[in-house]
Amino acid sequence: MRIGHGYDVHKLVEDRKLILGGVSIPYEKGLLGHSDADVLTHALMDALLGAAALGDIGGLFPDNDDAYLGADSIELLKRVMVLLTEKGFGVINVDCTVIAQRPKLKPYIDDMRAVLAKAMGVELDAVSVKATTEEHLGFTGEGLGIAAHAVVLIN
Image 1 (cartoon, one colour):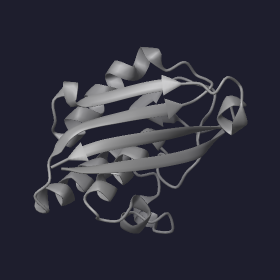
Image 2 (image 1 turned 45 degrees about the vertical axis):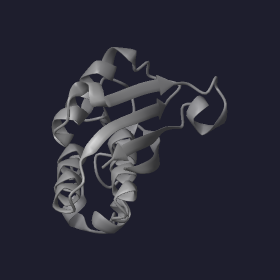
Image 3 (image 1 turned 60 degrees about the vertical axis):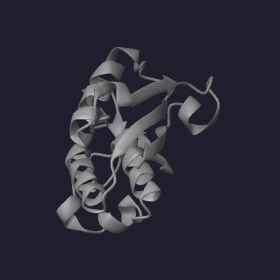
Image 4 (image 1 turned 180 degrees about the horizontal axis):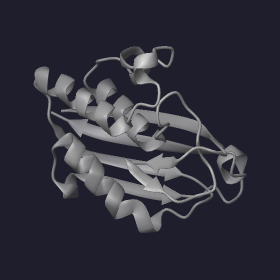
């Protein structure tokens, strides 16, 4: 078995959609990035790649390559899963935490879990997604950005 950890952060800006875990969330701001800037899915992909010693998303999907401009991160996650499968790895479970002062994410957690589980080809009970605030501390607490951590176990 192998463990991987991933982390990602993006700035909140106006005139962008907010997408987390492949789910579009109604909010006045979205995350700035070359792709759809889905911090949750990005952290998860980095955790999976790290566990399998396959590098990171910056190496696979560089932000200076127009092929990934506006890319759907769930589609990129599916590509990561192909790489893991080719190397003989399977996902045992994932545990993710999104750090955001606003918006409140609880109503969207089950949808995020379902989208991520489907993209990885695993059962829903193998995917945990949690959300927390930082009590108005730091850039996430001030509403300037959203961050995510992911821990995975593969075999």
